[in-house]
Image (cartoon, rainbow, N blue to C red; front, side, top):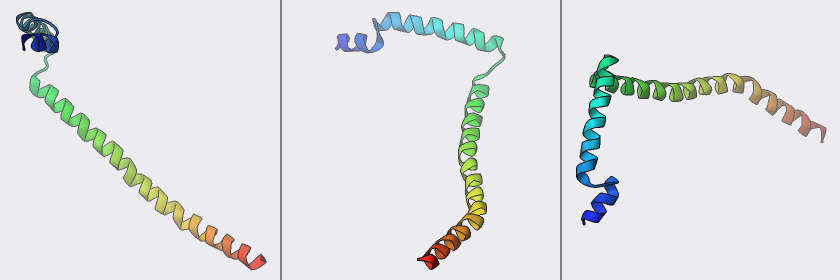
Amino acid sequence: MSDRVSNFLGGSPLSVIVKLVLLSIVVGLLLSWLDWSPRDILDWITDFFYWLWYTLFGSLDRALDYFILGAVIVIPLFLLSRLMRTGRR
């Protein structure tokens, strides 16, 4: 069982815990120096996904508007050309 845990963690549990603690302190110092809080990071992630959602689906909404606008011209012309072609046969 201990072998599985060591393989999963990438080393002995104690050494992994020490590495994670040291890395967390370094990252915490860096974020403190940048004056970022965990709340700022969560807000940024939330805002990013909000922006992504509205960019993707807002574009689909505009695409639907463009489709309807173009279809008002294209479909009658298509039908008219088919009717003209049928009349020649």
